[in-house]
Image (cartoon, rainbow, N blue to C red; front, side, top):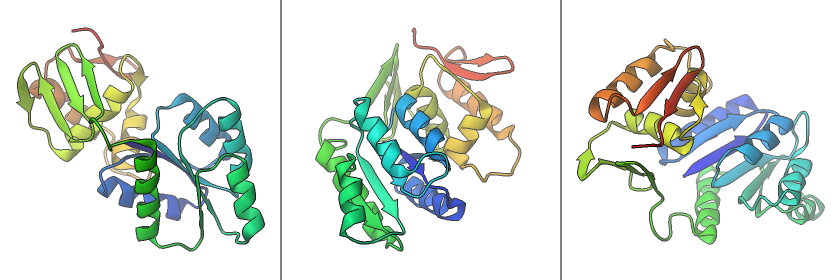
Length: 222
């Protein structure tokens, strides 16, 4: 399951991203309302955690724009404000739930799981992505090539998952770094090449194509 956090407090955003990643979610983070709206509109997310006080566009406007465009992704709003008016305004714009800062991380995770259950994500059949003879079960975190299961480490799976969720698209090295290692990673960016090389060896050499100067693309044909 893939989550988007739209939060301009970078330390809080990083803390939430790390915690939710440890819970088994794939997490993307942005710090601006306009970028959040773009990401939520273009990406495939199962839930959006959306702060209200944001630069660019505030959370109310982001939420309203998503609903006006027909996006039904569950939205959990975060705010430092409190009071019935603020909660009502958030819910009126289309938010599914509302959490006031400071909040307990345990409560946030419980709210996230409740919203995903309400939507049916993870409650029924596992989300399985099939591309030719490659099958990736993002809920059970299992990978099959033909009839054979392929054992991957957690990081290998996360890299593959990000490519699978955007199969056929070119995904840059920096996007993979932010998605799998988080935006604050300051190690060697060539670590992505190492993991892609390992995936090619474990799966199939031609499955992940290098697009010179742009990134990588998971081929969608067998």
